[in-house]
Length: 573
Image 1 (cartoon, rainbow, N blue to C red):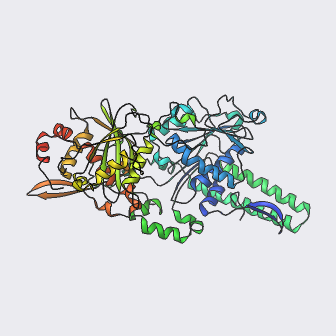
Image 2: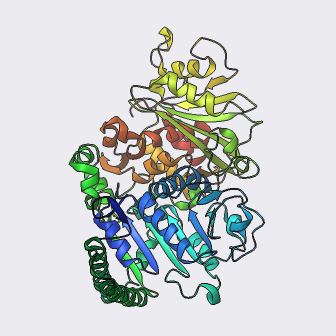
Image 3: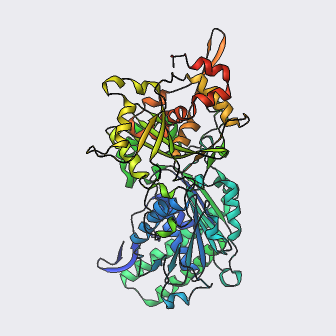
């Protein structure tokens, strides 16, 4: 079977004729169908970015030379640091090299520029191909990058992180020049890839709208037509190898031309949607990979991320009942002159200057949870809002020293080096002997590993605070997240820099019990017994750091004055 995804080329044993590459079944199907809109939900390890997106971007650019194209993602930082490096790796495997076949973030040679169908003055955030096609970069948290653009094809990766409404506002840039590119199968089409989304965890499943648009009979026609085309191509290459008469080659070439036309017609304005699990790539990933996933992933995550089973929205009670998308913001990166300093192919320096809403001339506030996973959330008040800006954590073998170093490194440019820290009362244990957990973190922030002062001062705010029962946290968070209690701030969390907190709060289940006939709601914390590597995204540990930060005495008193008086004397958790 010969396909375009299929590195060595053979013409008998030594002569080269056509590409043969290692590939998986999903990639072969995508290469054969290759229609107007491709929407693919793929499990872990099926190479959605490095193969599917990489191949489609090149095909579209080749089929519409000089055309403007665009690729979008949830955030520009994600596009820079995750998506495009994978796509470029795929280009390299297909022998498309930077500086030879394309340039990025710079003005191309004049010969290339003359082939472009539009006038381009700003080459930042672009890839320019040698045939004049240009790929613009956009993100849903930075809509100005694509403002006023008109493109012929739109690419989207990691669609599950892209909000429906924002995506819908990006689609109108698909306009293009029909008089010049209307012949192309790809004109005004889209290529969309993602992992399986879970709406219950705040992800978006708009990609499934394309499932209803797929004409299965037409897709079958495309496959059958391409199968015939492929057979004639194989015969043609066999004839070349056997060195038969030229007349036979001419006949076969006519058949190839005919079936290429049929395939093109069959693909016209068709949508292909597929949901495929990781097992489609088992020959490359190997069985060991899947055994490791079975050992480390929970059954629900295994079904979703590996087997491609769409999660069912659970109706069981969540602990953070009033938590909604309005409590998170996606525009937390500082694009106003900070990230623009970096070239497209550079990884931005990871420090607090990249945070849009941080106030460098004001002190920071933090919540700390100790345990197997050590969690530290950093926040600041912002007028009526209270913003969670950054989440830091360590898992074994790292501990307090590494967490303190990570904090000092990330906030090294913060001007006011003062941190007010709230934490679990148990972190005070061993204070008299200097062995208290919070004291170790304080020391790790205020002094480096050599004992030198860092300039930071940590104020411990929970030295005399009692335990905060989970039912008290539950009622307080109900009031805080409902945003109808005067005197409480409006909580807003950075969904990109605090993604572990987002996942933890969205997944935290509630347990309901009755004590003396009274209903008591507590947090089910069994997830904290998971293997260490799974704790950041799957356990309730990050949400506990938020608990200690927010459940401070003055806010508890505003939410429920009677409960506040009781809390100060309660010691059971």
